[in-house]
Length: 218
Image (cartoon, rainbow, N blue to C red; front, side, top):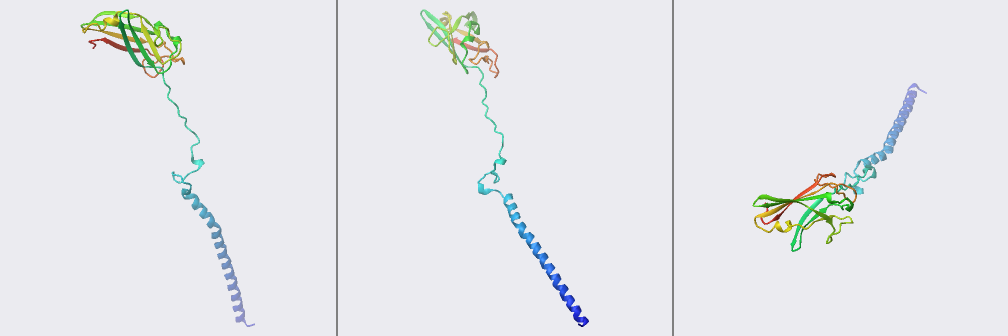
């Protein structure tokens, strides 16, 4: 064989070998791209909002994103207070007295009542001047009865002994009576809580209220 023919044959063999190597490399790169394309699609799906689940918060509707601690609703504690008061005057022949009604936020404990639980101080004024004074006596009673209370209730009643002041406080246009009521924090609720008489939100503290009776009250 001539030398020129040998050279051309070698060149042809080398060219064919290089082409096969390049073709195999291209197929390898294409194969890697095809294999990773599904993963790329999965990553896109994870990153996109999960709107198909109908969540209103950035497409997230997964228990993993919800708080694991639930906050319980705590009701504020109601203290034992007197929240309403009224003083009635009964004046007719042979029966003159006052009835005091006190409404409480909780049932009171009847066993905690005694004469020292309350004081009712009456002052009598005529023409603007103090002319008489008396610490009224009385007792705690049931509704429509003179018997002491025996069951817990939110209405505390006190009835005075017969007194001339029930009539005298209103028998003239130039006089009136000032009646100062004190209920002491020895009074307990049926749960054993002391009276919050001063209404500061904590048990303890005496209750005070002032009433007027007459035709020319200040």
